Image 1 (tube, helix red, strand yellow):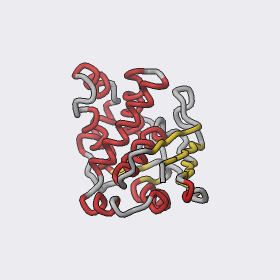
Image 2 (cartoon, rainbow, N blue to C red):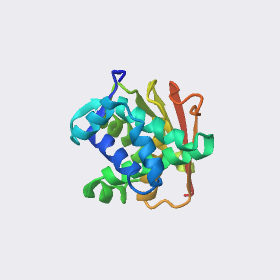
Image 3 (cartoon, rainbow, N blue to C red):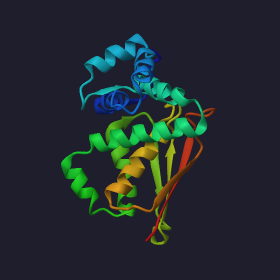
Length: 196
C-alpha cells in the first residue's frame, strides 16, 4: 500500500465498509469492491478502531472501488454521494443529530472546517463563504486534498445529510473540480442553495 501523509479516524473506514455491505450494492458488486482491496487495506480495516488515526489509503482504495462500479460520471457520482451520506448518518451521534435540528445552514457551514479537522489530518481544509447566506446560498471549498480520490464527492453526501438534518427539503449541492478523470483536484468548489 502506498502510504500518504493523510490520516483519518477509524470510524470513517468502518462506516464505509458498512456502506459497501449495507445492501446498496448487490452481493457480487460488494464482493468485487472488497476483494479488490490490497491485502494491507484489508488487514487495516479488520483491526480499525473508531477514534484511532489511520492512513487514508484504505479509504482511497474503497472509494476507487465504489467509483469503478458504474465507472461513469453520473453513476459513480451518485454512488459516492450515497457513501458519504451513509457515513455521515451513521457517524452522527444523538447529540449532534439534535443539534442539527437547531443549526442554520450558515452555522453548519461555518462548523464544517472544524468537523473536517476533527477527523482528517494532512488532507487539506475547508474554506467557507457565507456572504450570500441571506439569499439562500453558501459557497465552500475543499483545498489541498490532493491524492484523496473521490473524497470531494463523498463530501457532498455529508453536506446533503446536514441540510436534510436541519429540515431543509428544497436544496441543491453542486460541485466544480471533480470528475472521473480528475478524482482528487487541488480544489473542489461547492455551491449550496436552498429556499428561504
